[in-house]
Length: 214
Image (cartoon, rainbow, N blue to C red; front, side, top):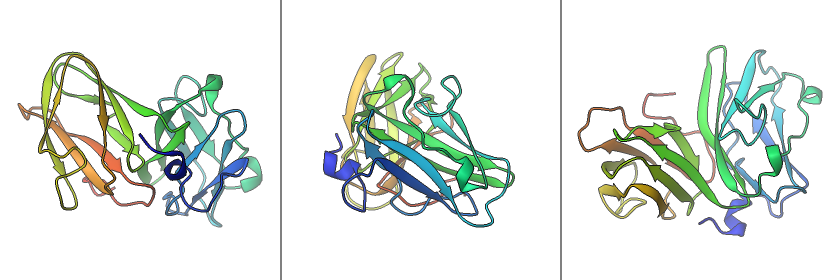
């Protein structure tokens, strides 16, 4: 599980409103994933000059924005991007989010609320929901598996990988899996290989591309 110091990211103690700086291409400035205590902390998108119209962030789970869809429009005018509190008094969890718009697809990035786990649903075929996930270094994944399943694990970077093994075995039900402190992109593919792999980015910030080049 991410420790409090790690969950705060760079820049020292967490201010009351934590800015997330968005570049013109929709990417997030290095390190601008965030962690805070709900009730006292908020996030706020701060866009660069020349930011385009029609861009939004989509949070999964829907901890921010529309409580059903997790969608938050991002205005090209900073005065129209208000600070956002977590929905429904969320006390802990990790929400991944994508930045999308005309010719823009960036992410996933993440917001850590209280430093807890990222919930991931796994169906009996090994499909992940959400299929693209981001967590901080030393984060905790809470896989809820519909049936026992074994994933083939591939990752960028060296060493034994974040799970210490080229396979990840899940039992039916809740599986808490600690991701070691490794900046990398991980793919989980069901052993049968019939489904597209799920993608998990592990790291404290940045905008490294997903395997599809986005």
